[in-house]
Length: 90
Image (cartoon, rainbow, N blue to C red; front, side, top):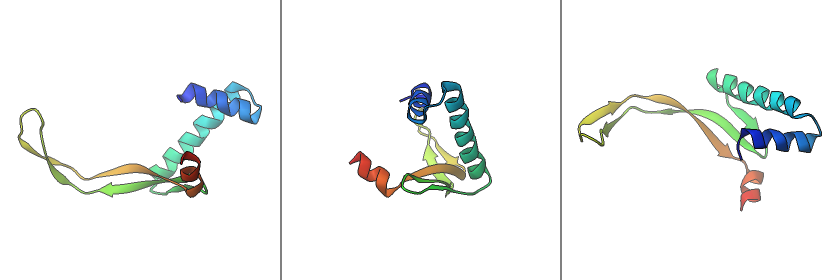
């Protein structure tokens, strides 16, 4: 499902226009992005948790040349599925 199909599904389920559903989806994604940018997690009970994890610096290898290189530390966004989402998938 792509973003357009998700907007259609939201509009149908909530019985609202596609334009309103698109604005709602954009507001949700921007709110999650802003919370993660500030270092907070977003916990949607039953659905899952969006959070930031710190990945340590490590050594890697350039696959073309085989030369070793340093991969810097980074903050990466993560998602952990909640219990009811896991149950719905299985």
